[in-house]
Structures are given as structure tokens and as C-alpha cells.
Length: 329
Picture 1 (cartoon, rainbow, N blue to C red):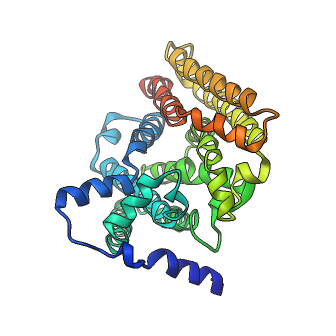
Picture 2 (cartoon, one colour; picture 1 turned 135 degrees about the horizontal axis):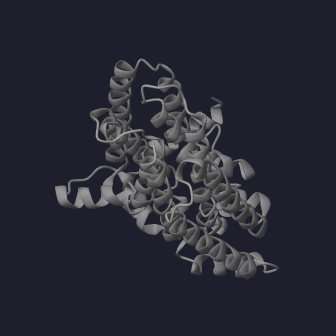
């Protein structure tokens, strides 16, 4: 780690005088903790997890096992860890447009937030140790080790993947779906099934397609702090075009992989309807920002507040054809 990266780490994890821990009621601390953990995005994560579990499991005994419960706890802790680290690292960046998050960190106190980060790392370590012990799959340590490193490195130097230009897009794909999906697949008592890997990749591409909207709305604040996100590096219109390509490609991959098992199933109707909704959503954004100066384009993006809903819709709609695959096993 360079001297500059080390200094940034110290700055992020150190408390300014206004951010020092203060006495507050447990109820207030809990509410602030919910804000820092970004619990509003948990339904999206739950949809991704549900689709991944259903498309990869072979029996109800696997779905309802203690091992699956521990896996879900571990992966949920991983998601929450990523959210808290990002919220802590971005508290100055969020002061204007996402002031609720910035205030939550300041009111809660950096020390409390640090303890929550350490607690989630501990939960991951305990669950991971148990899963390795019960499965004998030591590669789980590699998968989750990379995941925990990326949870920090998305928002912090030296990698700072959030500010890595176009590389932000594959970084989010890997962090949000591929690594959790691989961890899930390696908890089963069977070799890695490449059809399941491809299905999770298709799921990841579809869900990841609309995350670029979230990054695009922060372009002015990112520019002030010299953070080169994908929309800043590539441009808003090209970034949305990549998102649309991800959506179509991901849906094609998922259908191609699951169709041999699911067959001509009605479950593809709600799935393809959700994909069509996503295509229309991104298509309208593309038309809205095309040829506009950056200020006007950001206005279009910030009025499109439904990106989280679209991502959640895509993830939960995937459960339907995944269930058809599960039923035909």
C-alpha cells in the first residue's frame, strides 16, 4: 500500500471532532445503523440470493438445510459489510446529494461504524470457518477472501474500484453476483456445475445493467472529489448503452442455459416481461440523455428514481424460471 493510500485509510477510519461517538438511545442508534447499512437495497439482494439458490439447488433438503442458512447469513453479512464501508468512505461525497447517509455516519459516530464493520467481518469469518469445516472446500476461503478485500477496495485505495473508470462495471458485477454465486455453489456436496455458473452470470448481467444509473446520478459530486466512475470515464450515454447491452445479453444467457431444464414454461412470461420493462427503462434514459450537456443529462438521470425498483424486479422475476429448473430436476 502506498503512503497516499495509507493516509486515505487513516482519514476514512478516523473521526473528526463532529463525528465522535456520543450518547444516544438504543432506538436512535438502531435507526441510524439501518441507514448506514442501506437496508432499503436488501430486497434486491434477497431477490438475487433467492434466484441463485433456486436455480442451483437440487432438492428441498439443500434449500432448507442448516448449511444453506449459514451460507445466507454469511453472504448477507458480506453485502452489509460492503454497504457500511462504502457509506463510511463516501460520507464527505454524500454530504450534498445523499446527505441522509452522511448525517447518519456523523450522528452515529465513526467508532460505532468501525465496530459494525469489524462485527460483520467476524460474522463472515465464523460462518466461513464452519462452511469449510463441513464441506472441506478450502477454495471457499479464496472466494470469500477476495470478496472481503473487494468490499473494502471498492470504496478505498489502492484499487478504489468505484473510481476505476470503465472497470467499475465488471467490478460491481463480480462483487454483487459472481462471487456470492460462486460461494453458494461451493457449499454443495458436488463439483461446480457450469450451467449454474452461467445462469448466475446471466442473472448478474441483467441486474448489473441498471446499477450504472445509480453511478451516473453522482457524477457532479464524483467530479468535485476527482472520482472517475464509469459514467465519468465513458460518458453517460455510452455507459447506459453498455447497461442495455448487459441486460439483453444477460437475459439471453439465462434463457439459453435454463431452457433445456425448464422447457416451454409459463415462468418465462413474467421474466421476459421484467426484461422488457428494463429495456424500455434504459431505452428511455438513453433517449433522454442523448446529445444533452452534462447538467441537463444529470437532471434526466436524477428524475429516473426507479432504478432500484427495476433491479429488484429483474432479480425477483428471475426466480420464476429458476423455479421451473428446480421443479424439473
